[in-house]
Image (tube, rainbow, N blue to C red; front, side, top):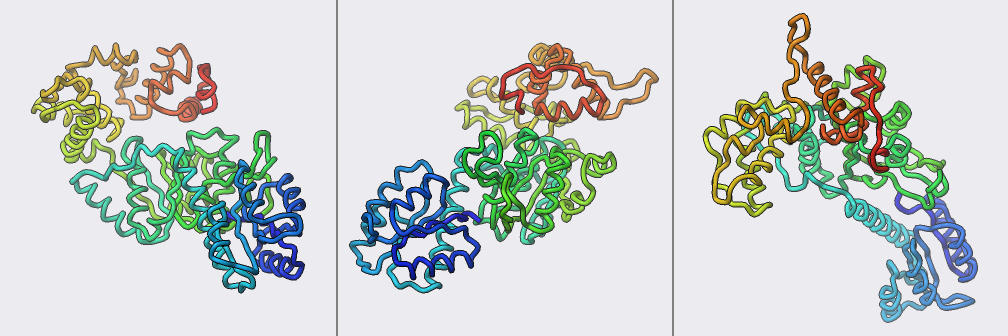
Length: 473
């Protein structure tokens, strides 16, 4: 509910009581005042979302009070009302910041329409404020590829998008899980409503509940104002919970309630807030294994996994490498202003031979690097890529991490992918002298992910020395 607290500023007792009754019936918190002084006292004690203000008041003019409200750092929407409504008066009120103007007497239906418009306006403002600060690295990117796996994925998206079902997107890092989520959103009936993203792995554990559900003023140190959470911002639209496996058991329990009941309370609040939200979640883990290890609630997993969408890694759809590489070459040629005339045959062979552990994101980064290193008017060659045997030594010196990781154990058994990953992470930690912040940056993962990996290995090695921002990650 974007609007919760309302002030009725009206000197006529009958009109004031009637408005209070109608608003409370609609479950708003209502405070009333018969003069400007009482209204100012109410505003000094709390923030309000909307005010209904009469133009003629005992201690002043409502239009002058309206002007003073515009100077407040957090200003409410204002609906001006008058029994002597004229076009000139309405224009004056609107030009001074009023949301709308109503002529008394107005019907309950007129009030209901005005409140509905105010709710929609407030919701739109808050979503825009959030999106103006959000980083949307995936905007403008499409699901590219002509492999059977990609064709099947696009068919599944078309079927699922038109429903309201909760979707769990699973895939390795770099496979394009967010692109799939955005495709589901764009093809859904909610495409004109908000799309709100929350990266669960990037938010400190002590703040994630507030990010999910919002908080009330004074809920904790630093909560100087009421703040809406991501679920409220996504009302009537879609919320993307990225890396859902990273949330704590406490937040898992509260998220389960939202999925079941579509309601919650803000941190520090007791008002039950109902939301209409479609949930899309992503993970690069096997959640079934997390459930077996008691790290993830089974009932929440079942709620999320209504429609599972699994994205194949790039090494399993090599038919797409050529298409993706060419698209990335054109994109980064335009971005960096470097004219590159295609890719040589040895370059394409090198790309096809690579295993792409970082999937499409790794391919994207490799092509961008190659375009930057390529001569103006030339074509991409294997030496520009920084992968494979051609540039092995220079790649080692550039990253500082040994690439000659073991592939077999002491008894000659071939190592699993998780064991190779463990060796790679420990090599990065060794290079960084145990500093987990630096190692996480080198590996292009979050510190939380690195900590989780070390916990899986039963290791407590390293420290988090770094910037305050890194330490909070």
